Length: 321
Picture 1 (cartoon, rainbow, N blue to C red):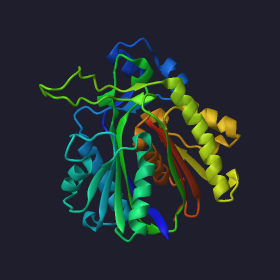
Picture 2: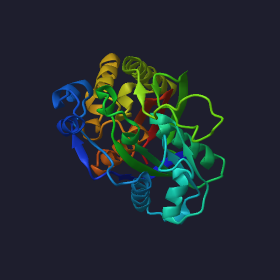
Picture 3: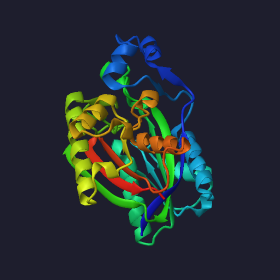
Picture 4: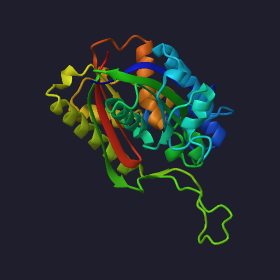
């Protein structure tokens, strides 16, 4: 007995910003063609007046409705995020308050791999008998952390939330997490000194920076190695996987991995063109949309793989129940 996902949901900002609009708003020397050909992104959602708590609560309620469970049937709430609306309390606690439930609630920062880490956390809780139903919320307001004068990063990301309800089942066949610690490839400093009169040194701007080439190479290498490792561990062939749900970081990363592995591109659905890189939110949003479109059926085997800041990575294989 492992786990299965029985409900999914999303919460999205109302404002969609195209590449041309982004160039006009920021004044950056870029264009739709420049962004699209290098990233596969055509538009992204950006928060205006929405909070992460609001988006997360919307996603959670939709996931609960799809699971046909009430909020008070949740035994644990995990929020995967690099940062909620407040430093404290945790985003998970703020969502629990909106849902009017009392259960353990904690944030987990796994960067773009947050969904995988949250699934692993949920599986451990359920296996240990400490929870029957776990609500996972992934939420990122990437626009709050970007330098909108840097076209190498600000064109890549979008905001949003997604949620899943997890319970005991036989679906999870494989999960593996890991890291190749690197605190510089993707980094966002934190303002910590406040008005402490004893603190030494200047506070740095809390803006995301990224070594694009290093991250690209890490991502492609990780996808190749982890997909192969998962398939070999289960004694499967690539054809035994019905769908590969990859972190939607950059279309060229996905293209390169497919080419190196020699796999069928039709098995790699994408939403990056609509949403950009939503960090931990990407894979559960892709999962939700595929389910809504009827593209995922009982018995199909899904392989999910993510990579991100840390540098972290995570892969799982789920036989859909």
